[in-house]
Image (cartoon, rainbow, N blue to C red):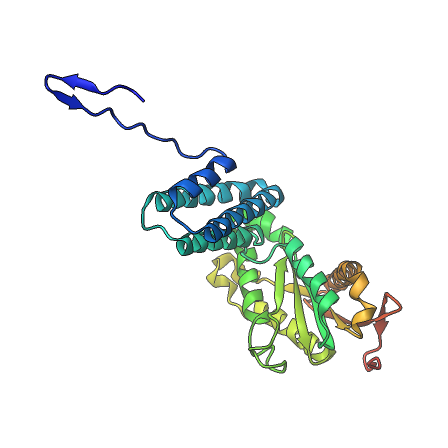
Length: 319
């Protein structure tokens, strides 16, 4: 310790040494144990929470694209600065720190799973949810997987510019959310407090996919897909841009209605089934695109000996 400075008959105290912020995980742990007057169990819980959040952030960091990484960095830096302020205050509590980490994890997770343009689920996250649904769902008889394509989108992009093309994509995404998630469309299912939410994701530049996880039968699945097509056609596209009054937007839809069957028939092949359902819906969608007018192309399918097979319109497999 530096010796005190003397001035006349008075002794001036030495300036206190400023201790730097922790720079490593070990220093942070030592800082918490020395500075926060917490019982040992609470200190351990806090350190575990910090470790879990850091591990989750590292995993999300690796999975995110460059654009997402920049957004996450900005949000994380701001929140970390807030945390340092809280830790420096004497009244910081374990509960407030826990809430901070919960919010941080939720924010990072949400940003990594949403398409930045449409705010819909990313296709990778959608496929994870579809695979999990096929692997675990036991009560549902029928589900529907569909793909939606904006007809002649390249022409709109080339003729009117990418800025309007982006607005068209965003508006179609909005209509998809509005139609597919409507209580009207799912009113025949089990009560809303027990219903699995419908899932939908941006599939490509001008394509979207959706999952309706519980429909009464194949006719209901077709009706849902057709209502979405009609919803796009009914929209007054001139409100988006006057040039669209003469060239309104149309969509083509391919939808596979799957008889779920027994859980054992799909549990161990769920990943392959998810991919094949999307592939079938994709082929149906392109069949619809070959027509002069927008259409919905449906198909009924079931799982037989680990393989997807087409069903006749009136055919329903035995339980």
